[in-house]
Length: 268
Image (cartoon, rainbow, N blue to C red; front, side):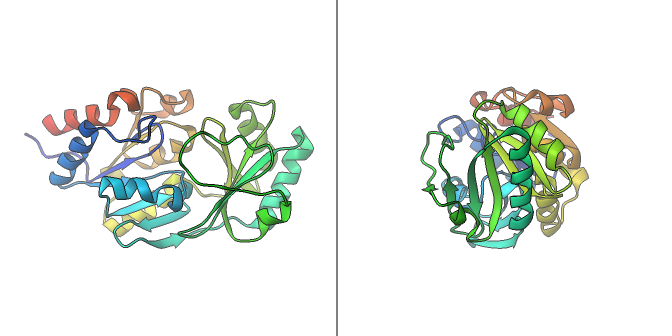
């Protein structure tokens, strides 16, 4: 058996490591354990902020570093503490929102507050995905800006996620970054922030280089991570934009796509 060819395995969560019920299959757990035993590190790189990620990491028995909030937060799961945290300039975000709404009309808004216990605020009309993740509804717009934020979520009553992302990016691309992270999830981030920036910080702490990294993902927000890593693997359920830049496409998250690739590499 040849040595495992990578020192770092970076995995997105939703639509990638997690199945639809937010579980991780035994097969995938075993494959990741085998990779770790072979000397590589596994790092979670997710758009979710720490409060929406911590319970999953705890369930996995994950005690290493995780990249959360689209790269804004580098989190030490074993010590339950933030190592780095980047916030969104609220003045710039407000300006960006006003420009987008001037272009396409009113948006429904949500926001993720900074910190280990940062709440997710949901405004009027924002369509919340079903599931166990906690959020706090708000009515007064001033509440949205009352504390430091990692990102904003925007929804439009008529435009598709792809259309909203494209128009918002064209309208405010010089002020903030706009990414599509999943169905119904279009986010406004600090300019220049991506999963790649957070992953590069975490990898540096681990003493690992981009050339030693394999990454798995399913959405356009994973594109910078694929550009940074030596090998990018799109899930079978991945968005077409990510599939177009991937080194390879594996099975879906429901069909143990991560395990399929890792098992092949382990047995090569």
